[in-house]
Length: 419
Image 1 (cartoon, rainbow, N blue to C red):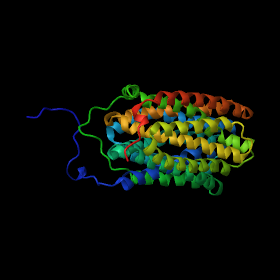
Image 2 (tube, one colour):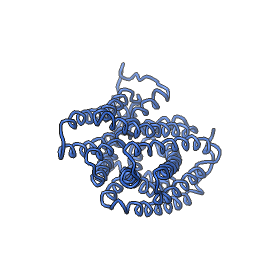
Image 3 (cartoon, one colour):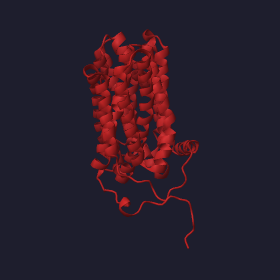
Image 4 (tube, rainbow, N blue to C red):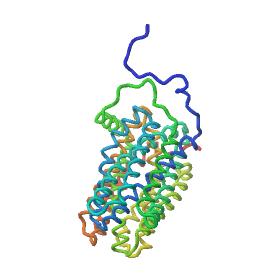
């Protein structure tokens, strides 16, 4: 007689039959829909806040409000993915995000003043949380595809990063155009459509069976921390990227203020900066994919780190819009190269059974500087933002130099990956 237990049983009968999609339909297409909603939410909603409030301080506060709830949701999102699987989490988060932006699209045209400000601030916070739930689920699905690819994991990650950067290319520009010509309603409706597409096309991946009891959030963080500490190559890379993201977050949060108030640009030009950065990032992703095959992870990552550091150090001296655009593009290209290295190491080194919790912790660490960046923009006078960027750029350069020096002799980062 089999022992009795309270563990959940896997589905049987017709419910266990899951379509065997290839990587394009099973991973890349749903990732594209979710990345579109992610990019438009991340870059479009701060523009919406600036349009509604016409305040640099409130724009910085909104940026902070957008990122603080995201950080709080990461551990819970990772535990949810480990427990319920990426498919269910992605679908629920995407549908809820669509409902939130549709509600805002109905409310904003009918209100003004304090109510409108409160609405866009709440919109920033809620979409931030839901977007990160969907992102964790999509990243976990990508991690599964990478492990299935074996020695070609870096190629899968390059495609996924290319999808993200392609969405970043179209998202800011599309958000700016829609906001300018159709108002908040058109932009928010487009985000809702992308969210619903992501829910409908979610990768068909089931959680592993049998399943244990749900892992508490705090325990999930501890599991992720122990895993990261046991992988020094991944840990040192995260240290450098945390400092790098401090500089990148400040540039992103201050972008509308710098372009519009100091360089005399427009909201559309703010979107163009990030679209140009996405083009440069896409080129770097394509280059990194082939360079890693031939030289290994460390040379590619170190070169990308040097490019990002030099561009950020020069950014504070940019006095024209064109110079600012070019330097931001170079900065984000360097960041894209380092991200390919990070994702490849993560897919190779992190065990599948703790991937969701470890992924949540890594992203929590890497995105922790972003709400700080929003607070810095809100508290720093606009004419001193250049000095703040310079200080962060120095920290970025020092942190990346130390991190890649530590990684230099690690076997996982030196050898070329198998073709």
